[in-house]
Length: 187
Image (spheres, helix red, strand yellow):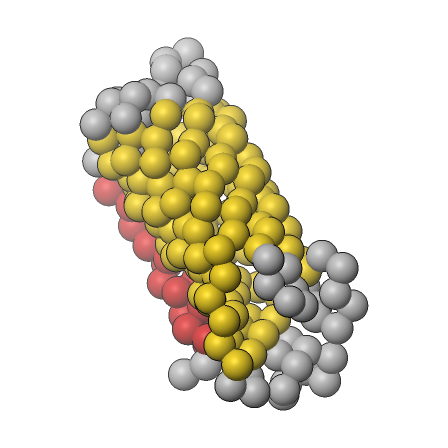
């Protein structure tokens, strides 16, 4: 199974679980009630989205998937570990110019409180494993920064929208933007 097929399978499974989690949550926040993750709680989620290479005309915008787990130190500050799977098609669509990435990041997030909608900023460091189809594997250190919004539908379930910039010191594709949508569960 190729990296792109695995990413698409992760997307399908993650999105299939969203309605199940929502249906199992019995509490829906009222419009005036604050819904905030409590200190020392956890969250996990899956995202799907698109990655856009910066400054490389040979690689196209491609779909990707990621998953994460997050720990809240306070109601506003959390630490997130994320695993992302990216696969960029080269100029011929399939062949030696293709680029597969496995990304492992650690991020610090600050989330503002307020009703059911919580904007956040995120930044962190990680490792980017470049596997170009011609057998050259390269592990690069990189950073990412961005932000988004969590929309809490219940106390334990939220929809997440996020945009990030990723940069590394790699030759070739050294930076890209991502835009994601996903679901998160809190406990």
